Image (cartoon, rainbow, N blue to C red; front, side, top):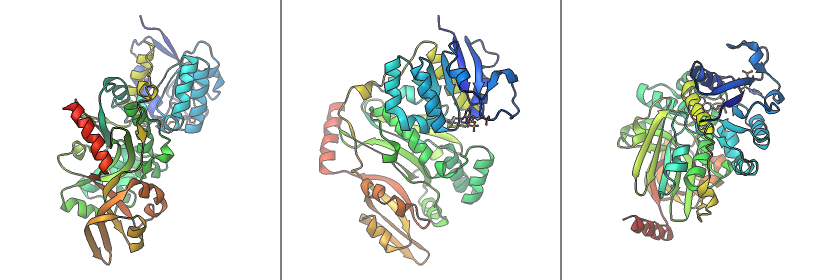
Length: 413
Ligand SMILES: NC(=O)c1ccc[n+]([C@@H]2O[C@H](COP(=O)([O-])OP(=O)(O)OC[C@H]3O[C@@H](n4cnc5c(N)ncnc54)[C@H](OP(=O)(O)O)[C@@H]3O)[C@@H](O)[C@H]2O)c1
């Protein structure tokens, strides 16, 4: 028999209300005792006695055994989750920024206080990727995980490529439909997918990487010329977070626009949908597809976590605790398309092995190799308006990386 969950819900916005819609009328052996919100004067669809602005009414209530944290403020969410775990309450959260930033401490707190924190809804909405990485791929050699983790930038790119909309018009549409964050740079600049990538990497490889150490660049400077370049080659441009094993001991992570070919699973992931490609040694390539945002899809993932808590489910973080010798590195060479104005940009970024170069007064680009370390060191340069960079999909490995990968492949075959 599962135990009855008495829930304290923080946040009654898009996801909080979505969750409530799903729970309503179902016999799930759970009850929402109280809902904390920020603005006491806002009109609510439920009885006023359920709502409070006083967090203590939930966190200090001994009847409440489960906190569901669905607010849009990462710092306040961190304090709520921390207090809840310390006081012995299990927690479900969908706050990727908060989780990615504090993961090591949150794991420690769960262990110290014998509590559980689940967060499937924080990565790619309705797609069940965290529990799969944690459980299903536990013993698999994972070569890589990548995908489309941000619905609003994907919506913008779909509208540009499929309907010829201008960037600004597509962004406005995404905002009007509620897909985009209030500050759109979090989506289009690749920050939101970076937080999700940090969480996915923790469960894929047991590596807890501070999001500040992960390179991200977005689609905000995409120009007509870049779009035409991709179209002429039958590519689409997608914003792709990637975690990839480049040797038996090294994992690279980054978020960057990428030219995607028509045979790539991600090519047909459009609008607000998300997709995750997992490349595993034995299972080979697998693809997860679904709605990456929205009240009901995300609410469904949150409910799945709540249901798992009824049976005392917790992430064991086995790969993290195993100390498998994997390390995070930025020492990898990626082939990129770089559009620029001043030759200085190409020199400063130390683009090597240039295979293509185009120069016209109003449009210049090179295709060549760049080390991820150089990208990280030159973020400010890359964020200038006249620069756009995209991965072509090719890597160049060092001799040592080639040898260790060959050893791993020999193990598989
Ligand atoms: N929207 C999505 O599709 C989606 C998908 C995946 C994950 N998420 C994550 O889910 C979380 C919630 O997102 P959302 O889209 O539902 O946000 P939202 O629609 O903006 O709602 C936020 C809710 O949090 C409440 N709130 C804000 N600050 C608070 C505080 N200090 N104390 C108590 N309540 C507070 C707000 O109260 P008021 O009602 O009084 O304003 C509101 O009810 C975020 O972490 C987001 O990143 C969202």
